[in-house]
Length: 344
Ligand code: MRU
Image (cartoon, rainbow, N blue to C red; front, side):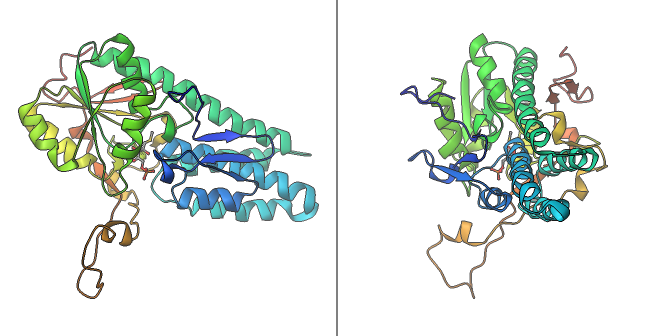
């Protein structure tokens, strides 16, 4: 992603012996990179949401394993695998909902288990490959999603499922980027409380590509659907269960319920690495609860004996409220849903 001044911004950049992470907590005011040389630092960058978004979390974790192998293979020959394992566990504990994290760690672990001799170069290449594959998948999904939606449509997105949340190009924002090339009528973005991924990240990211967007308060979504012509809601996903239930940023479920009432279609865009084939339904997905202070910061009463906050940061949208799931390998269309029946 290039800024208006030409400077290239990437959520993650592999430097050969370190990982540069764009601190998304400082956006859009400041572009600050932190550089990590160990897996513990990468785990902290995920837990503190410097890096966020399911695919980006998975890619960061893969680089975290590469850093771990680089550190432990050279320094503790005999028991290096145990040290790497404990780093992998630390990375796995950083956030619970995005399955891409566990998918990437498992992939890296398998390579370590199988490898004979110095694994350093192989493991670095594996992390780079996960990163490259994600960018390619996003471009493919962008085309497929845009093809399904067609030209001159009005869309809305939630949270940030863009280049910032992935290896590059984005999932939901990848579709919006591809739609923009074809001709798009209007893009709405929900602000996405409490962390404001929509207000701070999505509208900023789209603006860098000269894609105009209109920000709405989350609570304005129903009225938007009632009073404006909205064709599609396009979102990413943190985990998709085998039956098609989708965990994504809190508020996605509300949007899908509202969409049904107002005849708006819902598209989920996610790489195959976001599908958890072992999880039968969304009921078993662990929903991350974050600190009460993320909400209470905006509350004028700071006496926690009388005011508390409930802060689940994801929700699960049942498959029957989703019109289409777009992956890099193809599109799954909900044929039972009115309004999508006739789409190809
Ligand atoms: O808490 P976050 O910002 O990591 O949540 C991100 C989302 O919910 C995204 O929609 C999802 O990870 C898909 S990103 C391509």
